[in-house]
Image (cartoon, rainbow, N blue to C red):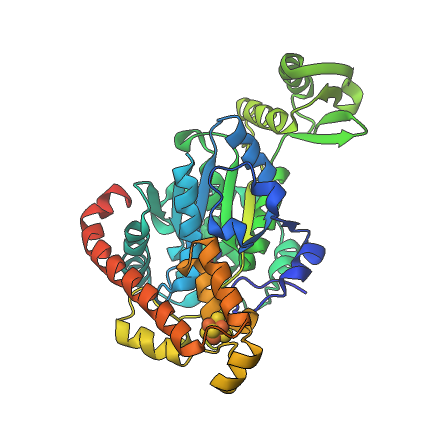
Length: 430
Ligand code: TRP
Ligand code: SF4
């Protein structure tokens, strides 16, 4: 099994834990964060890699970054909203936010021109982001960012054809711009750790599960270019120099760092190794990464990620702009919303009588899913809908009406805010 980030497959999320080693994003992971938002509480953000590195920074009030990206193609629908909800939350707790517009990826894999991609990005996505409450931050276009493209090229030195083919399933006829898209994405993710953009620090990439191959790839790239490798073993930690250049200088530098935060147990120059004892491996990793820059290394700490579930289309398949009749767009007029909601798949019974008697099945209902995805942010309100549905107190017509009213109000307000957002664009896109 491979995950193809460019297809529209649906995932069995359970399999991702075992097959790819994604970790569960359960309550223990997020419970110490301030005001846990609905997408944490409801397990919509369900998986992660190395999130602890980020929560460690949050706990210590140390700097950390968010980098995520949007691929301009089609219109922005409710399924796209969940990423920006997360970004807005992280911004509210002090993260430094950067958003990549993947116009090169859209050109390479979807066939849009850079000009078309720009128009879609601004009109469909960025204006909605601002309207949804994103405060000023840095949004850039891949095609305009020299550092991102340079890094993509330079880091590519440590990846080879078999590796990318194994991850992405590229074939002999895949166009080379497409083949290069993951490298540009690696440039996106890691460039925020360059000095100009805040330096080496934990970097969280919140994305849909389809993006995990890019995350794995990027983490591998970051590690491959490290000069030190850090291997914990039985209460001790081994710090090794990976190359043969400047070994004793690098060991000296590591020793100096370790002496401030723990102790050096043994140094073996011929093994290019230092055996040490420290408690805080995240801090050690970051400090060593910073040293690497003085020795011509890149010094990137591997990025962390979270994965969210995709919202279903109103027919129960994937929500996608290529199936507009089953997707809810942020620019949909009320009449369209009404039509789509009324045609939606529910968990209701055949007849009102039967539903009153046996109740409905919210787990199978797309209207209930909308409530879960933020239309009903209040947990008690959501629980009450669930209960009423199960017990047959609530019928689908009434329930859809309620969903419609909430959506209508949300979309109307958003529309007004989008108008205001036009004047604010320059505070975001530079
Ligand atoms: N590949 C992403 C998508 O298809 C877009 C993207 C580009 C991205 N660069 C990124 C996402 C960096 C996260 C981080 O939607
Ligand atoms: Fe879905 Fe509401 Fe009908 Fe229950 S009552 S099945 S939640 S639409």
